[in-house]
Image (cartoon, rainbow, N blue to C red):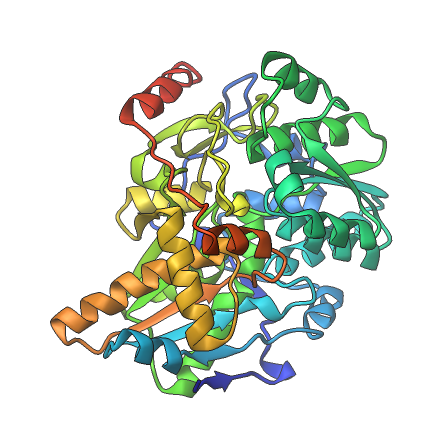
Length: 453
């Protein structure tokens, strides 16, 4: 097993986050106040988010936003993360492609999520907030925010999607070890949860449901703010440290990616790895392809519609212009819990609409086939979410075999799978299946949101 790793010195860790919206020719359409249907103002978000996070969310002018020194100092405990030349995977595939991956699994919590968790916890603490709430799918975001909340002495309540709460008990244990309260969602602790459980007693949850519960608790608790791990602009903004480091590391390797790939749930790690490279496409300097890899059972980018929709199931959030399957969409109980979300972030949705990026859907079994091959070739067991990016990378690397092209492919390994071994047990035993989704199911769900705006 041969690898080559590229690391940056502390002095080369980014000092600013990159705000891709400021560089976009076609800006995303504005989020709307669900009551008035008017474009959202910064102050509309202040009751829910820390003010500086709300300002970052709607900032379309500042290309670079300075990383607070306290956050940057905490980044230094695990950044830079390695850029790795995947010689083992290249050899296993017999491809002429050069494959690189940015290894975000080396953070203290095992995923990229800490990049935004530290920032959000910092801004909440700076504002004098004492309590924060959030949702989590697979538990990677919940684990990251639990770590960050403890670092900034904040009390945290996490609504964890019920199927993941059951499938991934050790992720729950990690959150509790850091001092967070973890509640299986839907729960009886909120109005939104009680309504869903009354109508669907056996419902195993979705990120949309968990968001509703976390938002409701934040809005009803004194000195409390809501935080989240993907979808919104400020979250993706914080993740751009990934791509900025990768730029410098690819330069160290003497290469530049022809293709950049990230798995896709709401857009945080895809945007984090892609947006810093994408700015060179905007100027015409480069012509890199950007591919978002989503699960075939939750295909908002590949089979959803661009529409204003709620970011949560109960309709508490602003209306967001995004590719969506409808906020009432109930995803299949796949093991990539972090990708089971009905919509896409507004930035990615606009970029896809403008054909500045691509999207592919990956079946669950293809993702795990790719995961095992990667583990055998590179020695790292990837998270089920990250495995979708690996599968898309393998597809592109195999095309290079057919064409003989020596393309350079970069993907983001967003997290390791060492706490997801129950899903590997099921895969190795032959008990995992693919989930099919009919056009009729999608159309029926989208019919319910057509009159929102």
